Image 1: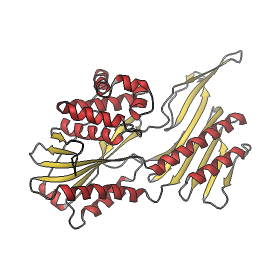
Image 2: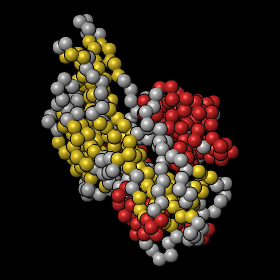
Image 3: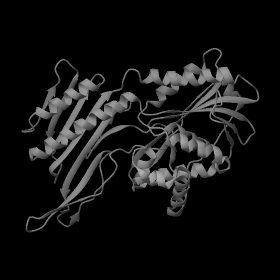
Image 4: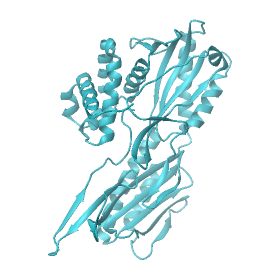
Length: 411
């Protein structure tokens, strides 16, 4: 669906009216406030997509106001409430009649009448970034600050890579910080292994043509925590049990679950687990519809992709139920977007199912001969700057600042 500048500005205003421009501009603590203050194209598209969903639900004004208030009051950003708006707005824009239920309705969140007349009772869930992965990222941010300072004081340009065969918890990340604080950055590089662990950190000079100090690149990768799938299973079972208590099997409707999963989740593994749970005796849920939104890099630039796998029961398939969801922009893909480790040389491998943290800042001359530098970034978390030096030695640095993560805040 093409999106003009005027359309994006219109839908951004719609989002601002619901969530209050004054509140959005008052701070940068909530995910929506952070998004509102950003000026990059991805942020503008996310806000416009939210406004598009809100406009599709215009007849449900009270529910929208109540849901927006609940989202604003969530310290973690209210992503679950935002997904309710996005999901129901997408269904309404796709031709279904949606009826959001009052907040205290037991068992399900909305009633949806499809264009063919079939009714769905829908539970809408958000399986966001896990607490384990959030803790991993927090620890890596400390590691990044140390790496950046060490490289700046070394007078060189360095690549630092940390990896482990077992999950990196808080203690392991702290040990990596302590190791990075003391290891010498010199020579051709070397590897340090943490005593009594399967974790190592390696450094080597950055040798890209034209690279200038204090360029650096930090990559940390770790296996996911063992409880990741258990946490998903518990959330899904809770939704299934709620249906069993409050919405028994009926020929009049189907019970379904819409679940958003984070871009780093192994969604195909989650779909397999959901299929097993739906086959359990007495299960009254007919389908689980997953939404995994992510930013995919293509030759033409970055694009939002939607992977929409489904776990179905034979009972649901026999009914031949079809539904349509319309989003403002992006494309639907038939396989999950691969999470890849990137460098200036391209992909270094698929890391789907692992935790990954990448940061860096690369400095290049503004011009090499008669060619000007392109400030494109090779991957998420990597900033690029152009350095200009005049004949007298004066220096100016030009940077197009990009978000550290291509992390979708709403979609």
